Image (cartoon, rainbow, N blue to C red; front, side):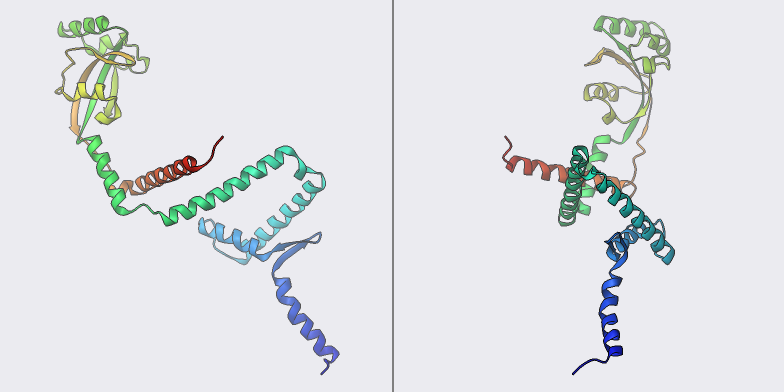
Length: 258
């Protein structure tokens, strides 16, 4: 059986149209597949920038054509063989592949709600149920600190003596460290002021690696901690990063590094 000319032309067109539809354009013989447009559209829509539309697709098509023209010109001028460009391409290749590995690991090893709740509870326990408005005077020696304590007991104002502090950031403000939870400070420092009542000053100098501190508690209040729901995304992200770090460390231990 043979096709008549008209039927043969129609048959060829039926075969050719789907193949042509796979590309949005052909630039100097180099095809730009429709899938590239679809991928960019999907990304733009997912980011909430614009809805899918003929106008968006036309804009993306023009952008891809412009990029392809520039790419061909760069290759023509030999930039593809440039050592710096090759190094940058390798870095980009690694980043893309690693990101794919990370996404797969996170998908297969998700952080559970129980993990998030446990981490939040640890945070609450560490932060405590009180916040303290603290002032301090930082001195270079224990003798200097004890001398300041003696002057305060003698009636001198803490805020005036704070001008002697080596902590220049708080010295001009009467030694004010503002409101904070005990966990915000080194343990030895927080242990000293949590033992005080409102208005009290430490009886002895408190030593840290920075020097000797004289500490005063201006006020105490109930801690204003965020609820679990308020910080759930941040806690989940922090736990995910911990998982990824542990995964990487495990892989490094197994690797043969010379």
